[in-house]
Image 1 (cartoon, rainbow, N blue to C red):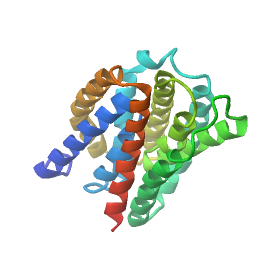
Image 2: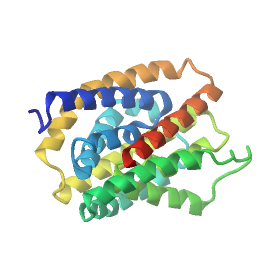
Image 3: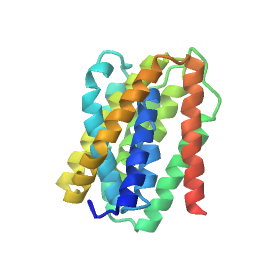
Image 4: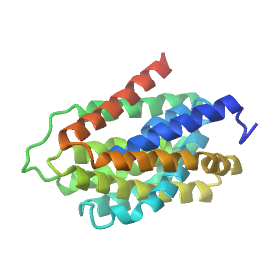
Length: 246
């Protein structure tokens, strides 16, 4: 047993880490949305969230130079509010029954897909302060509760007429901030266990490789194909979440 998991379970989560990191490298998001539900099959929801936040922090630091200067100005207030709201979500997770937590996390994945299917906004649209602030708070709560800051952040950028490079860098900057907040909050609240750190260390090489491969693919796809792939990722996560609930 390694980190409390059998060799078969380790193989499953390593494969999930590789695939979800490739998606992150290509789209700028999706790692947690795909990885947390799979981790939740073999470890508790709390450990899945903590491990995912640790991995997001590590891979976010690796790619920090690529997002600095390329993200939209809106990423700063969203990231700041998300960091402040993250402990609230983590506390909620700690007092929620594991079965209910798994159900709610699945609902988060489904909601992300549904929201992205909404009609794209006009090219002249600019989000108002309330929407930007609400996105930040929601991202923080979901970081703590589900390890998934993406559901409110992804539609904020993908439904607008901005370049994929800008959307991708903005989301990555926000996700790095939320992973820092999530990891620090888990540590402060005593919710991070040694086995979570060990599992993150085991999975990180797969995360690093998958993210690098996805990053190489990013520059070779058109904006239309990139957006289609992003929607497909969320759709796959939604189908997986539904299958898990049945």
